[in-house]
Length: 305
Image (cartoon, rainbow, N blue to C red; front, side):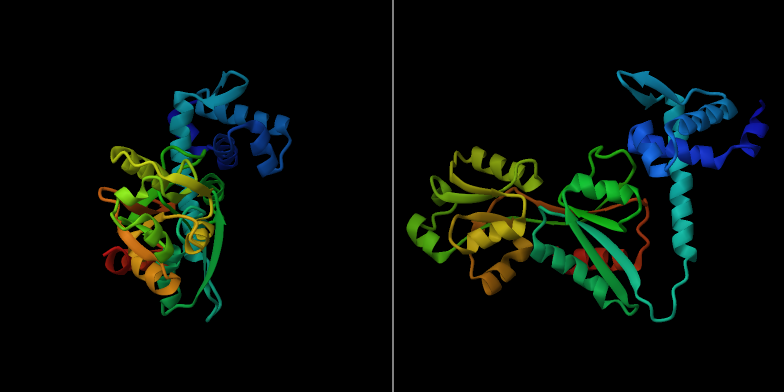
């Protein structure tokens, strides 16, 4: 079959089936998503291989992985279906006055005060916006982003090969990291920062987070060994224990004023050399949603200054 015939008769249903298998990681999961029988799906892929004249998968262990040609086809298919999604979004009309949906995934390790500061500008747009927030672990949020169920994911770190689909990392901003505690803790352990942290109770985010890794490096470099009183997936819960005086804790310095004014916390000092970052993860290379653009502008001009 010549190249012109391949281009003319490429079956885009079959191409979507192939794209879904790669994204889902197996024929079994793809069949469930597509609501097709596995034999039917496998037959469609064989037809696609025949029309393209290449093998798209090879067996590795008990599973299938894309061949080099399959990876090339997937990259093009990903572009095609991403553009198709953007086209539907661009052409999808809304009734006058109906709010623009804005569905955001929030990584559960991000401070809620910071998330509020970042998302609030979306609700201040002239065009009405209906904000829908889903909080979860990053892997679960990425799965939903790859299925186009989310417009955006807010994360403390950029993507490093997670998931089976493709997404893009956009740095919203970075700031320093401060250490906080109650006045009672400071009276007990002193304010000779950072030496006062040695042997003092401390509350940490869970292992595997960027803030936890940075804190461990920072403490280790200074020979400081606090007593770990608690580890938390939920940053809001960590701060509740911090307010109760259960231990010192670290937070982005963009929140210093809020923690002092609204939560009665005392800033001990800055963890020099540490940075807290927030990324917007999207399925599109170019950020186009009006609410996302408002968030990025506010982050750069107001939150991280």
